[in-house]
Image 1 (cartoon, helix red, strand yellow):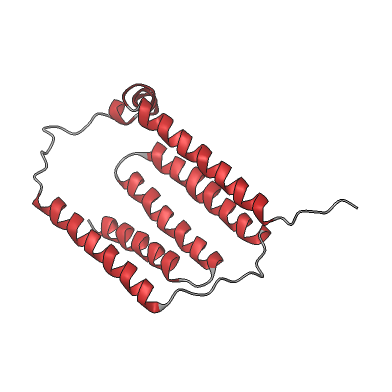
Image 2 (tube, one colour):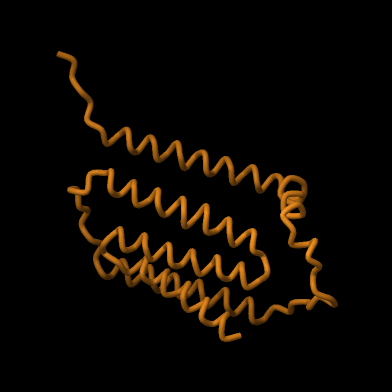
Length: 167
């Protein structure tokens, strides 16, 4: 119970760092802390494979790629900061969404399993079977979204490069 609370506090603290920092590198660090909290939550829920994938893919891959992107992009360009009223409005919308979700979750009745899930239910083979059978459409949709994100990032990066005029 205490460990779960600490994991939640770590995740929320990382998320707050990610959204409150003016420095983009520190914000990416906060995102990494939040993702580490999510990995710890998966570990606490008894899914070490998903926790390891969270660490390898998101913390080890995505955050490092974000840091490289920031370091290799033109850091001299600064966009004007959004006025505080926009931040306040975004925070109020997020708070309203959180309260709505919390009300729905606390009002829902969840059926408790009669017996705990077996070790085979959490195995890597079972996860692969579910990804390629039951959740195949979702798995493929996520791969298309990832491909579109990569194409968009390349398009944005190429647009920033000045075109050279032939002599």
